[in-house]
Image (tube, rainbow, N blue to C red; front, side, top):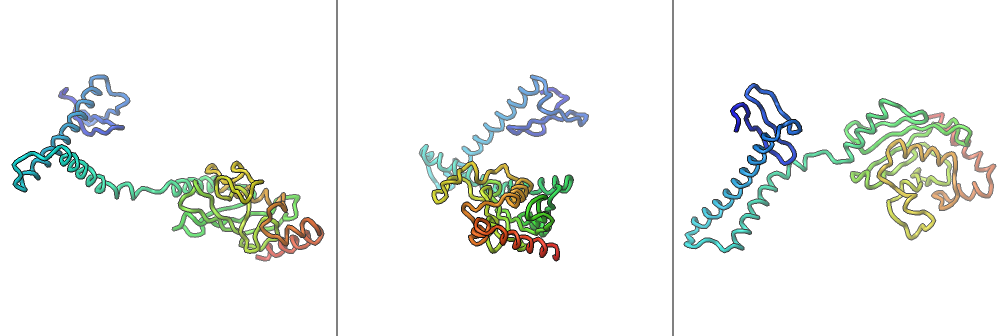
Length: 262
């Protein structure tokens, strides 16, 4: 090898050379000869590992007084056992990595802090728990809920974004698509895939991993603007919305007034 280069590390996806003077040369700018040296070093490391495995097999055989080399099947099993042991030792490194959901929620929290949305605010209920959010939204203009201030909870599963969160109104609200206990019932928060019990709701209307805190809350605000009595969550509210709209409006107005009282 050239006297002005020292091989520092070789990995399948990163090969670094450091010169005598301490300068670091990334693999993307290594000349052809250097890359050839790195490949040769990788091959040498691999061969060394295989030889080491073979030595281990022979040592174990001699320690039990065997006069014959182990059959090919036994040697292969021993090699696999050694490799499995190495993987178990390395496992804690991967177990310590942050889940995808944590990384995504951290990024969303950062973005919402930089650019607060117009009609709602959102943040962690507890700084130690990224999976529980407090949301405060205002009733959309020119709707029955205009002027109201509604507090909600948004609870994410660890499997997010593959599975949807659950959203719940803490402030009492009268709406066909909100259960009496405050749980929100909209298509995008339903588990992904087809639902045989609800054929009118296609898989495309249900949860999709592209949804974020912002898109979820905007969808809920849109739900306030356009209540529907199809597959309602609150049967009484849906019936009143359909059959006695003036009474429905009065109940909503009382909810809006109470939301301002805190």
